[in-house]
Length: 587
Image (cartoon, rainbow, N blue to C red; front, side, top):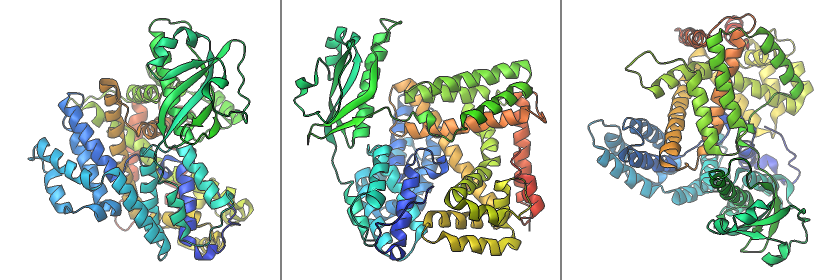
């Protein structure tokens, strides 16, 4: 989250809705936002598509039938909360639920109902209605809650329609902060939304590659890939870009790419060349037909030429330690780590699989390796009545729940420091607590800090996103009961997402298809695995509370139960002691 100058906004005090939308959309599209603040993998329309895909995979024997129940529950819950979908549907939600949630109804009956829903909220219709509702609410009275919901759905829709997140981010920043256009008032939302009425363009992408491609040029032609000796062969003016080749290089032209922006076009071209590379490795294991990611992306429709470099690896879209801090952590880890031999071997195997995913550019390989890494570190299920996915969900949730709000508040603290460091530090300095995160939790939740909360509110002014985020956490931490309700909702969302990751992994392995939202799932499972590994490291180093992985998972399970029991006590209120106990930064 970052505050940007609004010098190009004529009347920001009269454009609160639009400014909140701009700040929110920027955060949604930022590569290094927390997963919680990134777009959802699916909206209601896409959940219909997923349900139909799952039914097809069940019929093909790639997925077991009980998986459908979880998809349909999520779909019904999404439809209940989704104002875009509800405004398009002519079917009553009670009628939909009576079929989709009824165990006695056949899969065929459920499929027909999902098809009816999907027809009414197909993604293109959904996008148009989403835009109409966004325009209406932004031009109307202040309503950040509706804007937040509609904006998240809008971002999810655009990403699944094929727009690249990097392109969307650039367009957003340029329109609201950097281009020469002025932002007169909230009605500028209409001009912004028109930027996404474009149909896909035809692109070609020019790479530099090794001369080995020349030997397989006939095979390359089957993939619309042509080998060139010079740029003169493409009859496009590329003089604005110095793209000369070395003596051992040639040019590779990837043709007939339909995409909505240059970043998506490059990603599709990369995939074709990587597929050629993969097929070549079946016949020769030592040397590969390599290519450079620095390339020219040419819009065949209008002749526009852009330069593009390697995209950020999905595995790198996370908050990372700086190298010196990482070195200190590793030294401490190696000197203090105390897992017994069998558990240490299991731990290092999971770390190796994590590393394989980290070093791969293929989202399919990343997904498969991360899933195996997660599955391999989780204790073996000893209950014969519990299937593999049930065991993974049951063992993963305590790790993600116990650390959930602490991670979110920690990020809010960093955002506040980046925004107004001196003011924020001086505000929380008198609060007695162990660390900035714990101080902020006390400021948010304890009644004796109402004056400081109001001082902070007065400073937010036109930084509407951080103001809205602060008020949200004030609401969540208003009582242990509301915090527990938030954790229950988080548990439900995480369970759905773990099951979705499991289904996507099965689809990739058994049918060879890659769901459009796989990159988001890779980010999610990477985060889940990092939380588990990081927590186990914490438990196995000083003061060394565990000596085996099984003990680690049992410790988190018991801690989670205690956590929820304490929060769920009748009449329980937040106190300084309760916050010290559960939000100390140590599991």
